[in-house]
Length: 263
Image 1 (cartoon, rainbow, N blue to C red):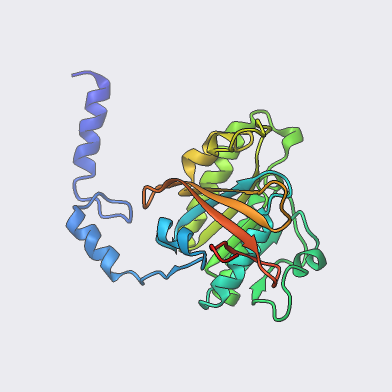
Image 2 (image 1 turned 90 degrees about the vertical axis):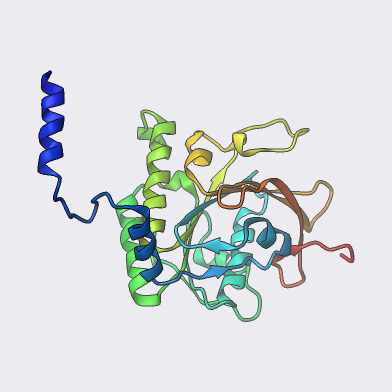
């Protein structure tokens, strides 16, 4: 018997009675644990076709929102923030691209209840985790928006952008699971042929963005219009939805909703 096999057999003997938190158990026992856990909320964007396609959002999910610059990514997130608030779901925003004053202008009339840090730190994942934990403790948030990915790591110091992005995505996914949160991560597209429709392959800098996330969405403006956009669900791992397009329109309240035949 070679040494490697001997080492393995020793471990088999040593771990026969192991009962740690990460011990291996039958599915029936895992199912019982799941049944005893608090039931997480399933909540909606109130964009009917989107909600039907992905069957709402559930805690533990990491959702990507991408699109061209000025394509409506932040406005889509703000619009969903209002919808979530109407379902008693509070949101934490990390808005790196807009000042608080600029960010707040999107909400006309009575803004939803959401929270945000008084000051932001870039390239600080542990700080992000701390603020999420703080918001969970103080406000019982259910959703986090991060706008956007490239403020989470230092491009200038990065030796391998793709791998670092993969690490960021996995870090955020673990927080979503542990906190029973939905985390929306906004990211840019790399340059693409404007004559063609963008896909998740156009997510900038790393294939890990699509590989490690639960849902990927793209939004872009409709040419020659001031108030219309396309939203595409590129993929939803939970429902199997693939390449589903939804027409959006900017409503009089300044937020996005689904475009109907009457619009």
